Amino acid sequence: MMNRKARFAWLLVGLLVFGLVQADGVSWDELSDAQRSVLADQAGNWNDMSVERQQRLALGAQRWLSMSDDDRAQARQRFSRWQSLTPEQRIQVRERYQDFRSLSPAAQRRIRDVRDRYRSLSPERRRELRQRYRSLTPDQRQRIRDRRLRQQRGN
Image 1 (cartoon, one colour):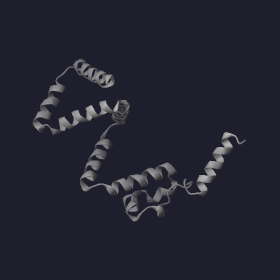
Image 2: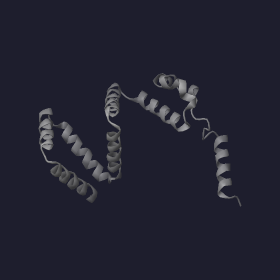
Image 3: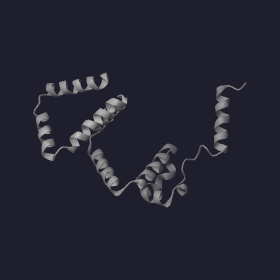
Image 4: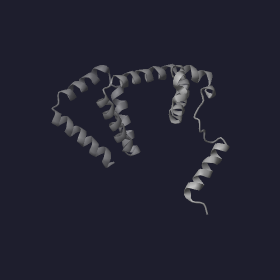
């Protein structure tokens, strides 16, 4: 009987032989002309990248190519906002995203619904709500956040 390492090695060899796993990553020539165009800035260091990075970039280029012009404009805006964040702010955003992902699907849906309702408000009403929130003391803001978190986790 083979041990686990030997079985894993044979499995990997089999996957390599049948082409289900690529040991060398994604070669530049395997990319479509459109993907190469999107990733042109990466051409010089493509072969030095990890397999995972090549695969992520190839997939990202394919997603980019499938987007509408409006979707691309929104993605550029989000990326620009992301780049303007400090490292501490980026950490905070990642933590909030992880918190969101840990919520139940129903809680995530409620949050999305609230966001959508807020976005549907007039600019004047949104400005008014932001100003009202800014006028709260830090303790009042924390109580609101804590109450919302309890409600989200409770459901």
